[in-house]
Length: 517
Image (cartoon, rainbow, N blue to C red; front, top):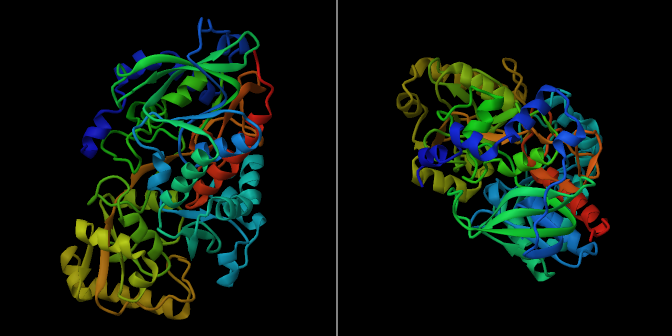
């Protein structure tokens, strides 16, 4: 499917209003602070005369958070656990994630002589988040990330083999999976879930939740046999959740109508890194059942994506490994324009101000040392990453004045030598070397919609909060469908920590719920 087709097949404005109905109104009221009574938002539904299936815990979404929740719910005493996935394959965005898990005090940090702490990770998260993070949620992630990572190693068998840096962090704390992909984690989660008896059902789309007269979420309407993006496909079925539902359906970066409601600038001219199914209707279904949303207009653009490849691609794994090792250049001037180790929002905003794609580059020392071989090779094959025999060739390829560009590289190299950037304050790592060794590699960068920081309001126990400011009984949430954890900016590598920490919490607590009859 072509990328522009994916964008066009996202919910149109007309269909959005027709299919989501009052959900957009509920979401809009919540985000603007206009209050609603609990009765308005959580009126009892007419329950199905017959449930087609019944489970103790039903999990919506099969990514990092959803599978972690399912595993912990099953191990926590839930007799039967069901995972629903609307797409034909499991994993959502998690399976195309770059595989970096940020956690403090890990084995890889100690092996690399990096001193870190939960306090420092929390400090970084709050600073990047412009201090609008919900402190309790951010603290929960920072203080439980190491345990979640070690659980993935010891219980699931996930392997982490190197330590990476992401812009906005104070230290290197991103533990990279052995294949530089989230698939290493999500595939092992899926295998473990099935091994312990969790049922996983694909092509099953959530349509709506059902609440009883006490306001408890008791089940849902779904379409089984659903074929994305055809909302008329599949057959209606009713699934009872005897204990609880865990919503871990991800964000809405691919839903142009919904993201434009919250940020009108994010039109169909901006592509997304996300898988096609990141369309947000499960979040809106929760809003229709009384859930509050928060910070929905904080939508992150990835500064490391390339206009020369579709979706997430390979350039992000090239670019992010080079920050602190190679310069980022504005081709219009032939000079650097912003610190390479800045956080995602800072860099994306700086690139947009340039008004056209910029480049990041490295030499034959930095690139093979930092970039995962498969990502480099695939990027070269796709033409998104270019290889050059000289700096002069780089200048010519991007229409830069050679003398200006060469002078800028010389200045950059002087900063690398003394490990201090006098111009822009880039963090330069101790093992970085001047950019002098041919061949040279470069890629163009232009932001794409990447992560939606806003979502459902939860507490530290992963309970979804309603308009009466109390937890909605029987409803938990984890991962990108929630808001408040990251505030204005999610730091790179913290998504895996967020999903596993709150996914595990949600699953454990869902299993403890008393079954309704």
